[in-house]
Image (spheres, each protein chain N blue to C red):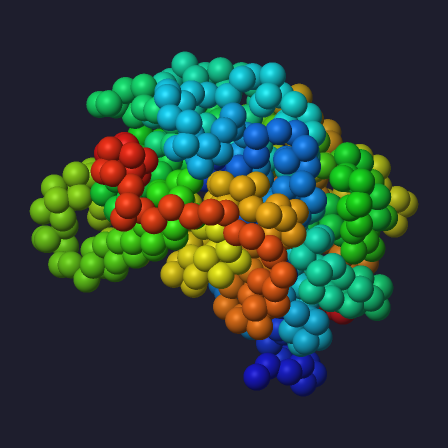
Length: 206
Length: 303
């Protein structure tokens, strides 16, 4: 059992495991000094000092969170300051506003941004590119898969990365606000844990 | 494998990482066969992670016979238009022009599928030539490794499509995972013969012997008709589930689709699987694979 018993304790980081690339996030987190827990139920959520929302289908994850009583507790946890890191679908789920959502799609919200789903196009337009991410030394190999981008960010939102080349050059693809962080791309794909480390800084500060 | 690691900062499409990564995002999800835009919408509303656009579901292909081909581009367009989730479509084994056409339509994944009538009885499509990723069926590890060598970015165990009989899905999944475990138990100097027996390239055989798993996502397909079927395949080690005829050939497609989605996520929780299995109405009428003449078994197409 890992309970948070003050300074120095290993934090327990959850990975929302309703659908998506859960395994990759678990592997990225395991390489850091944390305990990792997959979360499908409210009683698992309450054990976490931080939570990752993985890549996957945002519509599917939303429906499953609703069906299994996780939606409202998670929204409440974000409201009361739980550090959360969302990648791709996870970014959509953290956004206060979504363009091109399905009619019944809701988000957990918390990030004062407007996110556009499938913004770069279809799978044939999915790409990888090396980017600078604020707070990470060197460049990050960013993998974008039917990815969203941040169309508009509120005043309190810090931009961590933008696309640096190609047709979507300049688009915002990584943001941070308070204890929330989100990327359009998948730092968990390819075994680089530097962006996860950035998230752990948020957890340790919370 | 042939994954490339460019150092330029220019965006690059169609890399192995982008193709395989797309399949990683589908894990823990259900991909549903649909033949109309309305069915695609029902599938999306039920929580499908993707839909497979095709003209006839396997059960009808089986019943009606004849040559089964790529779907009409108009029909694929209408499905792409109807949903926001990824859309897959099937090309015949070896029919690289059907694949070119499907790629040009903006489909997100191509299934080079034994459910359609093969176009080439010797060669599969050279899938490295495409930007769009491919999923291919396999009945055993050697077949899976040959497809990956040709560029498949996702594998599904074949099962026997259009039957509602899960037994072949079980056989194929157990075979692939069993052969992987066996490979892991071999000494290094035994891997050369293992590669010969698997009829797969030595380097790839050595790689999977070391990692203990395929370098791509492994879904299951072919005969899954109930939430319990889906949960069993997940417990056996599938990363996710394709459901073909099982949903839209059943009494209440919307409810069954949602139930299979939930059972796939909570595959290890019998209470959830029991709960979602209640009051689903008629499952698809099944055909026992044993009663199918050898020549009518789709899983024996492809090699």
